[in-house]
Structure formats: structure tokens, C-alpha cells
Length: 309
Image 1: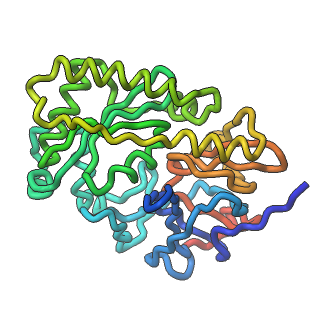
Image 2: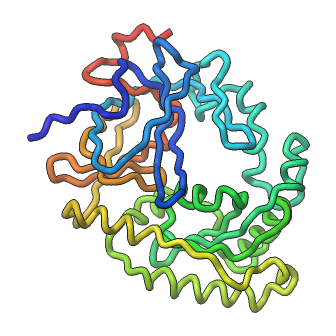
């Protein structure tokens, strides 16, 4: 049995701020943490590179993470306020102007984001997660790959380009309501998308059919649909990493209500909300995004022993 050290942080208590993805020549994931006891406002960005070891306990204590600005930089909470619901305090929620755009359908009423909404070029995408689930979404043009990686898409295509977020939101809403394409993923879809029983053709044929249908019946927005559709195959790289580890199935690590969760193993790869780990031959996944805001203990420290603030 392997005893795993923790390559993510060497201080006693970490505050999990965020998971982020970047794309240069390949997809790269990062975890954003702070040293909760000594420097809670200093964000440390560490690459989640396949092959590193992780060993930490997810505690039940949760504190505000701050808020992102319009350039996607995380601004730490001024008071590191304890929270019970979500992962932001009321003050940081009020400062998080783009979060109010989440449920927008193109008729902007968010005065704080109005300039961003009207002047920032956006894309509309269709992303395939399983053999029978496609999601429609929007993203700023500069965050296309990042957004798709964050969501854990297996395959995706950019289908429209617009001069503003508001117009992209209108197209998204039209596709959602007219063609029954959802704009949200539930827990089941998130977990099923981690499976290994897919072929790339499962995704491409499904997207071909849906895109043809949309373009044929969407003359209202035809000028924004792009001819040379940009596509992303994330599944091939993901499957290669898992098969190299001998994975045939993935189990899921879940904490019982009000229980702490031990996360331990060698990182096979990050995918969307999840870390996929190999712990002595057992391949499992933990939804780390659902724990953003929680404290992580390095080693055997128990939450009841901590003087957190």
C-alpha cells in the first residue's frame, strides 16, 4: 500500500478558493488555495499536473472565497467571512457583477455589467457530455477553451460568434427553448461524462445532427452562425490518461452529510469539477468544485482541534 504525501500544499490548513483551467498548447488545470492560518488573502496557484500525489481532508468549515473581476482574476474577501450557504459572503456576492448574468436571456437588467455585456465579443457553443446529452452555452471569446474545460465537456463546437454577450444570450435562449437543448448539467450528467464507454463518433454524429437542425430553422440569427465551426476533442486526451492507468471503471468519493472527506491518491487527471485519482489501483473521482470555500487539512488534523481565526 502506498502512503501518499501531499504535493498541493505544505501548510497545515488550506482554504480552497477555486479550480481553474487554461489552454496554451494543451489543457492545464490549477487549484487556487490560501494558507488559511497565516495568509488567508494571498492566493497560491498550483498546477494540477497528472502524476502528483494528493493527501488532504476536506473539512466542514467554509469561508468566503471573494469574487472574480471581469478579467477572471479572483479578488479575496476582505474579512474572510464564515459562510454556511454557497461560498461567498453578502458583500462579495454584491461585488460579483458577472454572476448576475448567469440566468440572463439577453435582456440585460444588470446595470453593473451593462458595458461588459454590450462590448465584449461572445461565442455560442454546443458541448457533448454523454451519448445523449448536449448543452448549449455562451462564453467570452477569449475564454472559449477555458469555459469548456471548466465544465468537463467531452466534445464541443463553437457555432456562433456575436459582438456582445447580450446577443449571445439571446441565441442561447432561442436554441434552448426551440430545440430542447438544456443550458445546465445535473449531477448525473456530470458523473456519467467521466465514463470510458464513449467513442468520438458518439459526440460528432449527435452534434452534426443538432447543428444541422438549428441552422436550418434559425434564419433570425443566421448571420452570426460561423461556416468553419471550431471544434474541441477533450475526450481523446482524457481517455488516454485513464487507459494508461489501467482504468476500466470509476467510483465516486462522496462525504456523508456533515462528515469530513479524505482525498488521497495519485492524480490521474483533472476533468471539469472533478479530480480523478488512483489510490493503490482503485480509480475514483471527487467533485472538488462542490467544495470550493471549504478548508482542507494537511495530514491528520481534525477540525475540532483547530483555532481557525
